[in-house]
Image (cartoon, rainbow, N blue to C red):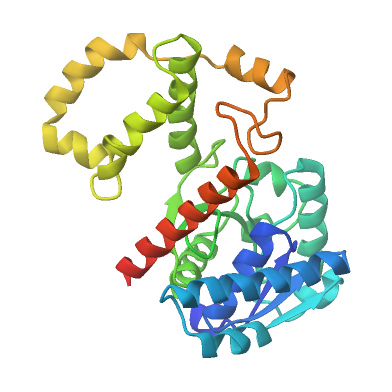
Length: 314
């Protein structure tokens, strides 16, 4: 069984946003990282993004300027699966959300990697069991769902399958902690795991409120930003239920649950927006009208906020 303290090399398969973001996290934590993409241009852009993001963090008191180049030096790039996986203690797949592609990748990685190398997928919603179904070494395949941006959001959902061995889960939880993240264990391989199920239950209700004319999009968002959203980092739902009492929670649910959105299909409003090409940032119109300036301001505001939270958590 592999031990966290013996880990030297991490392989990241995929050089996109999540791939280079996770590579950055492991490199900063002191691990040698092999970042693999089939496209040379993707790897060049990934390294440029990593240097930019490390600079962004250092300017805000997270890390030091003088540590940027040593961290980058720990990342090697390759267009070869074999070169990436050879000698790797942990392999993280960050490819596109395509089930067939992921199944083929893991079947291939399973044959290449040493028998005690842990293989993880960063899928956000797909069944880990299904992804591993064409591989022989199902015992060492599991999910590690990172959140974007991975270098600022600490949560990692470590997702079990019915086939994964306990030591693989324990090792992965330990490695994520050693890399400075906050792993949680999802004990069953269910669609959406834990956090995405909670997130999209909220999104479903938010869209339904707009669809039925109860409030406009800005009001829905403001109701969360200036209300319950403020206390969520300190007082999450189940803590809150205990604080007010399970009896009060039951009384409220007895009354209100029947009125909440419980559709098992996407909202007709959302389908209509997509049909009209109102895709949000992609087309500058969604629930809101967007300009390049307001899109940049929103992204910058999010990153600045997450950076402030990270500094406060140190």
